[in-house]
Image (cartoon, rainbow, N blue to C red; front, top):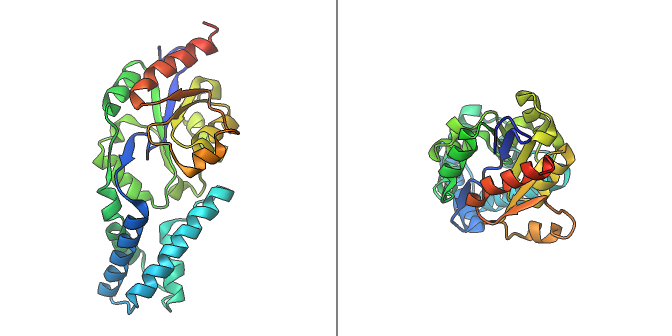
Length: 256
């Protein structure tokens, strides 16, 4: 595997690819929404906590479903403002929203931890001369930035694209093309690695990139639904398998 060979760059997904979630998401969402209601009341907003939690949780769930269909990001801040307007608060400052969302994401951020062997893999790829980039689908940019810093990942990746900041989500090929433009590389020299068939693999295929599906945390309803129609170029059962798969793709692309 050589950085000046056929494969020159690798783009990673973040959640369930580089870091794993150890928690019950519906339970965490409920708990976090209750915390959010409490924080907003402390900020001076008069809310019925139970009603707010129910409406906000529903809005978040509907937002998740909608963004998977049109690839447009619904930021958590916009959903919060929408819910607050229903409770009669049309004006809420950016500072208040930011403080509230820090508390909202605190519980879930505590459930993420690095994939075992991840640092060794990133070091190996970087030492081989490959450029490393990151594209993450997420509703809050600051949440992802904190996760990146918590996992000590920032020094590995340039660029880092987060859907909440870009306004669009994988599999929109524009996200992948942005990385290609930053690196001045053609698509056939870049590999995308991620756990989601519908986001990572399909998006890479639309943009003309090589793809490696990482299956360590990929047993999801979405992946099961797409398993017969979205076929990845390569599969890695564990992140430690990634360097070998990158080498294999490079050899195949060069006719080796």
